[in-house]
Image (cartoon, rainbow, N blue to C red; front, top):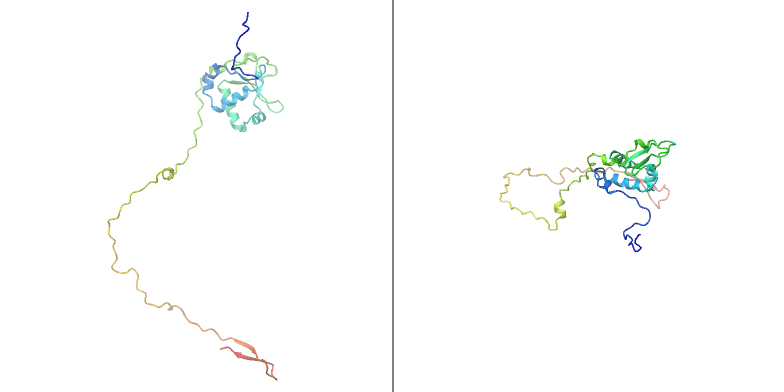
Length: 217
């Protein structure tokens, strides 16, 4: 007879959730995967409803809506999951054939209709056979260190001791340039302006045109 006053679990989850066994998390396959591959695996687990393990897809449009906007990185993460045995491809899609389909290797496949693999070709627990080394992480970019880093970031200004010169100054006995003997207007040549004949009109003289030529010089 079951206990009537059985205490309910306080840390249970309400609503749907994706489960991953501890054996997967502790496996060499999962621990050695890159961060992007692990994140993509959890995105794929989000589609699992309990009876569609063989029909999980990583279509470009669906990934974009989930925040996976770099198609090149998505392909690399997907191939890494396949190489490490965490997922297997169950159908090859293409033009007018739909998207590629995948399955999580720690779950069973209950329906093989329309798939490109058979029950004999599916190896459950394939992730346990992975012996690959951890995926190398991308090295952080190398930043050039400024020459003035120490001076700019230091709270106390750096002081350099001043060394007083003890040498002597030598003065040449003879001047390096010859003395100037000319005048400031030596090279200037005075050229008189040419005389210009202009016509000057005489006002008030009768019997004449009132115009005469007169030199301005």
